[in-house]
Image (cartoon, rainbow, N blue to C red; front, side):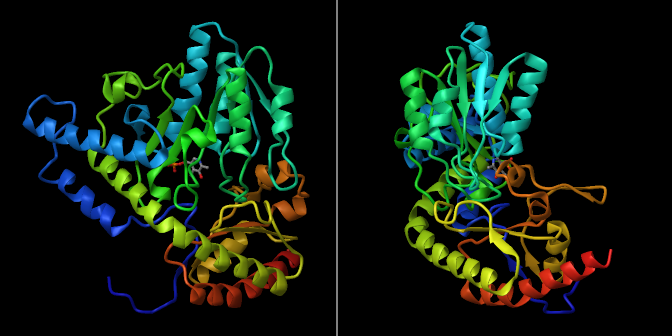
Length: 393
Ligand SMILES: Cc1ncc(COP(=O)(O)O)c(C=O)c1O
């Protein structure tokens, strides 16, 4: 099909996914064609794939300050979170170590839904801590919530919806002193922030390749050596018995190269994106009445801007921007025409007439000033248009 119009398209949803970097595609290509062996096979084809997989573990470990043996490749970030939480919880159950878990209502569904299942079907008790108006967990609240039977704390490194950074190292340090396993979902971070598992004091950490210019369908679970862990995807002995299933060798190779790629880019991209992001925030707040930034004003991911607009349905605004060729996302889920305010925004104490109007604009390595000029021209008009339409309902 040929394109009939040259409509401008601006992608500003890099927190949802990123394009695969050309060097990543190039590195993966041989493992999709000539070097297609199963890394678990004993013959030469298998050994070639196994060597590439070993190298991917080494490179990935180095990029995160971890050992190669502490890296497990999974099918996505969601799977990494699931394995981390169930793996640690089931190990605690196996050894009768306790059944209390601490987390926050602002976590990604990959964490909250897994914890709810552990609570409802497996009898674990979960404390969801309050967050402040910026979505931050207070480390003192974690300290107060720790009990003798606490086995696991799970707090994300950066929030996907509001961009707020959590005090991970502080919480990690406290957990380590108390001998409690600490998991962090750092899925949103590697393209913008350096990650070192020792500095963060984490025992478990989930990442997802497609958020840092790698392929979709590959996640990473870091499991610190000595962390009690029961595999919950059972079958063969892949990934040192911690995640059964034939490994996606091309995906693992691409993920390792993507981590190297973002490590090279981060130093120049993070300040560049922060400048663009701040320009966007200032422009939106100046041009749109009844608009606020959601999440922390400074202590947030450098590429991430999020807003709430009073009396605006976020999904309707998203669609109005889509008509203009601008791709962004919203935190509120619209179920059968019945818009629900975002649970993350509600947990932060944002009133529901504002929480319905959540919008996330996430910038990436390819975002330019011209892209933002276009958004700053269109967004105020789209908000006014949606407000007019809603007032006529
Ligand atoms: C914070 C966070 N955790 C987990 C996930 C899930 O990752 P994946 O899409 O690889 O399953 C996402 C995806 O948006 C995320 O933002």
